[in-house]
Each structure stands twice: as C-alpha cells, then as structure tokens.
Length: 389
Ligand code: PLP
Image 1 (cartoon, rainbow, N blue to C red):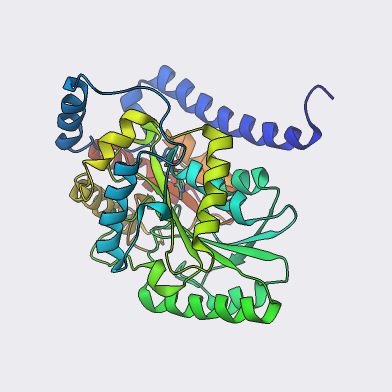
Image 2 (image 1 turned 30 degrees about the horizontal axis):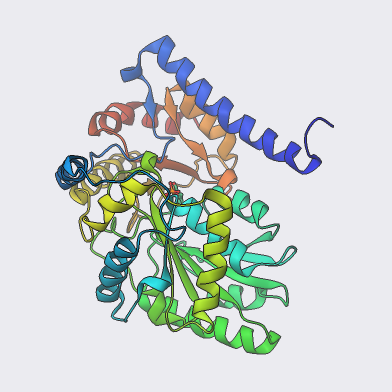
C-alpha cells in the first residue's frame, strides 16, 4: 500500500466531500453562481466587526511588532486578556495558565482530546454531531461513540448515563450545535454534570467534559450557560472563526476549568500536544484577538436569515426545530432517504448536506451563512422538491 492502511478510509471520506464541492462548483459554472442556492458550507459570510481591521492597522503600524515564534501556549498578555474575559463570562477566576492559544477550535480539540485520551478509549458524543469529530477522534486514536439526543435535539441524559462504559474518557458536547442549532440549558448541563460525576465514581476513572463552543456568541434569545459551572473536570475548546468571522485566520483557544482536578497538569499536557501539532497559534492573530475580547459579529444578520428561512420552509410544510443558536437549520427530510432527497434538492439547484453524514439520517443540513437573496431565491425550489415527494 502506498499510504497507511488506516488512511485509506479517511481519504475516501475526504474524496466524497471534495466531490460534493466540485459538483457545487460545476453547477455554479454551468448555471451562473446566482442561480445556484448553496447552503452546504459553514463558512461565515458576515464581515468581521469593523474593530478587527482597526486593530490590525494599529498592530501593523507598530514598528516593534514581531513575527517570530511565540511561546508555544501563546503570548502571556494574550492569555491574560482571554482569562480576564472568561472570568467575567463564567463567574470564576481564570488565570493565563488555564489558557492555550490554538489554531482554531480544531487545534483546541486536537490538543484537549490528545491530552486526556489514551488509544482505544472512547469519546461519547450526542448525535447528530459535527463531522470533524470523526477526524479528531481518529487523530487521538479514540473510538467515537454516539448517543441519541431527545426529540428536540437536546441532551438525553438517561441515554448518556447508560452509554458510558469503563472506556469512556471524554463526553464531547457542542452548544450552540452544528448541525441542529440546539443550545443546551443550564438545567440540562447540571444534570449532565451529575451523570458524569456519578459515572466517574462508578468506574473509578475521571471522565472529562469537552465543550466545543465556537458558536457561543451566536445565540438567539437564549443564554448559553457555563459548562465550567456545571462540571469541574471540563475543558472549553473554541475559536474566533464564527464570532468574529475569522475562520480562515485560524485562531482559537482552549481553557481548562480552574476547578478541574490536576488542572495544571491537564493544561501542560495540552500545551505539549499543541507544540507538537502546530508549534504556536498565529502570532498576529493572537495579538489582534487580545484587543477584541467581547466583540462579536452582527448576530442580527444571522437571526434575520434564520427567520426568513424558517418562515419560508414552514409555509411550504417542512418540519424542523427553530434553531436557538449557530447558523444551521436541520429539517426533517420529506423522504426517509436524506441522500435521495438532497439529490432532489440538487435538481432544483439547491445544495444541502444529507443528515446521515452528521449521524442524523432522515434529516438534512442547511447553513444560513448565505446572503438573504440565496434564501428568498431558493424557496420556489424547496417548494417544488417538497411537492415532488
Ligand atoms: N466545531 C464545530 C462544531 C464546528 O462547526 C467547527 C467548524 O465549522 C469547528 C469545531 C472547527 O472550528 P475552527 O474552524 O475554528 O477550527
């Protein structure tokens, strides 16, 4: 074999994603980009807040700005700024040694998972879940095990309690959720915390709660509660990809709950992995985000699009839960076969992602990180596809 056996399936998986993008590009070239309604990408199109460019200008005007390696965990002043901001959000004293600046939330996930998981251990994730988790589990040589959510895509804590085994090392949650838009409440996180405490005791080994929160600031009229308040052995992984629309700039961080047992050791392990995987997070971006704590994109744009899409689809007859956060809608497929229905949508030049890839067969995902005109222009096609089946 020219490549590692374990990579063959991964490459095939990536080929399918690549084909999906190529097919989208082909349709746009054939019909014109404005005739194709592409809801397939979670790439934020809302511009970064104006403060971002201003901060970049200030940084670039500073003759002393360096471009060398930074400390592997990030500049101390940047980690201090993040720690101060998180202290106010989580009502808890965080210090810079709890924080590691990373290459996006993906970098933070790789650091967190590799810091606490031994090969063969299990990551438990509520389904539907973000596709990238298969890859992060692969890198950590862990088994990704799914547990169903309830009828509203919220946590089914009884199902979680019975899915935990003596191999479970990490409970991985994502709220606001990609692909469902669910935001877990303080009450359900509190129950989850108790379930994880009980299970840690029962199996005599610590279970970590890893909370993937890149959409924390994109929530509509609901609070995104603190996981640090719900469970001590928790780690937050996140980025500025969505809240500042900086996905391509690759900047994020990991925060270890200061109340976690051996918090310093967990952070040190994550720091070592960070050094091995990426050396350090981008220097310029670290310095930029330090000055942008608490600043967010204009979330009202996503809210307007959510409302436009929900209203249009509900008038046609589609069945879905109104997203509480993030910028995805996860409607029920009118055909049990979501891949087939996504094909029917494609005939209408609408690009959606079948739910099966997210561990949610029978549904499909629409990203509304798209112009309003894409939403309004697509509704006739959604209607024809609905009527066809
Ligand atoms: N986690 C979730 C749920 C995501 O949707 C994404 C990206 O779409 C990531 C992690 C990765 O984020 P980043 O681009 O900051 O690495």
